[in-house]
Length: 273
DNA sequence: AATCGCGACAACCGCATACCT
DNA sequence: TAGGTATGCGGTTGTCGCGAT
Image 1 (cartoon, protein in one colour):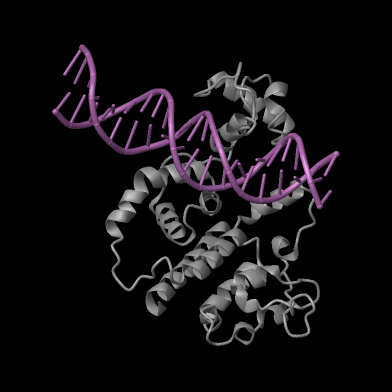
Image 2 (cartoon, chains in turn brown, yellow, cyan; image 1 turned 60 degrees about the vertical axis):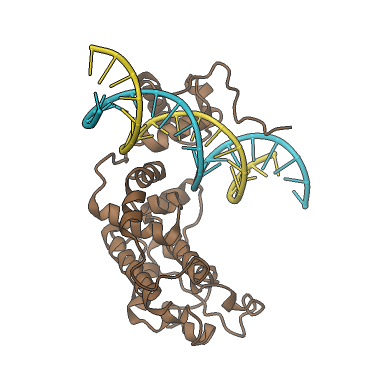
């Protein structure tokens, strides 16, 4: 038994969307909002499957989409994010307002991959896939997840009627420092995780802002952990503080911070591995 | 002028995961 | 908790336009 197809292919239009189909889809979403893609085509009177409608909306019809002309800044960011995150197109797209994962994926496959392969002959002791990347990539992915644009996070959560966490509303997520008394974390050796993992997973209920920011990662992981590299660096601590304390930062500032983070990643990879 | 090759990008497909009942 | 459904994601394919021959 094969997998059940997502929709019957009979009587459905396939291939390029017509202007009329676009108009119908836009009008329907304007009136009824996004979501319920499965039933949307029938309700809207479109002979398309729900997935196709969703894709068309997300990648082409949404009003906030920027099209074409990827700037050199965006290109640089894509290259550097890809080097850390791999093919996590949706995460990369999340850092580029108005760009879709599909667009970035296509741009990478058609333009950047060759460019990067051409110029990216290892010039210095770069790490092999078997060395540091697991830690680095996990941390970088976590970082990117934290970097979903605040507007997007807020919108998403309002849509779901979720109470905003402090970090999402601009108040600092008051992180409780894990220690030997912490019942929630004492059974888990934090060295198993990156400090991003632990940081994000911390119980935010009791500690004050200053406690959170004074958190001593060295104490948690010890000086030999590769993660402790960051705890010794004041600039990294500062970035962390910025990110965690103000989710309403202007997007440009976030990009600047992210760029700094990526630079520090590159320095670390080049210098210590 | 015809056609071939290639790049760009829209769209499709299958799988994974989240969510709901 | 299990099973079904909806949604998201990333790889792949199809189509179109344009330049080269």
